[in-house]
Image (tube, rainbow over all chains, first blue to last red; front, side, top):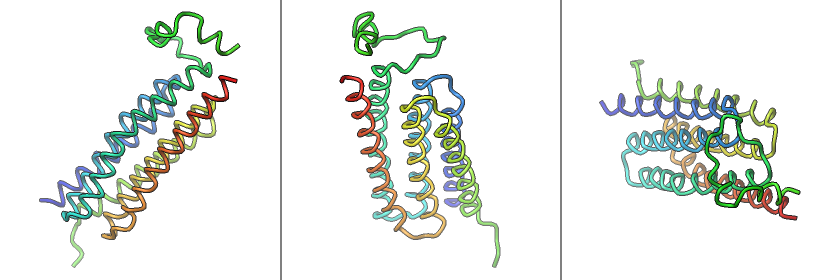
Length: 117
Length: 93
């Protein structure tokens, strides 16, 4: 029973990681790509680590798995935020279908172009 | 005794899926029109490596790859932050 649970979690997690990779390849601009990578990637790694923790079933492996899960949940949003901000200010183009640009409102119109010039 | 082991089968499947994910990321790493695109691809590749190490630990029953995975996760985060700082500095000059 435990073996089937671990197998299911492994397949689910690995599938989500592959979806994250496909999102990074197929999404139209940097910011949507980052969306795929940080969300689907975090879900995938969390599920894989859950499978590892259940499979070993002891405190040491469980602690390692929990450490990695907690670490990714803390760092993935921070890293994505920093890269997105830096890329936005560096003038990486947005997808032409973008509807809302809140950072533009925050900075004031034309501020991004002024910083670039 | 060669019974069907669901965990081992799933571990092999997961390794295949993660390897395919690495290849897909590699395409984006080569194509990526801008530097931030490449940084995102590298970041996801590091996460995929952590996943591969975890699956390897599960398949072999050794704990060692799990410890290495913790270190790789740390280094991937530091590398991404360093790249973000570098990008921001490069523009503000």
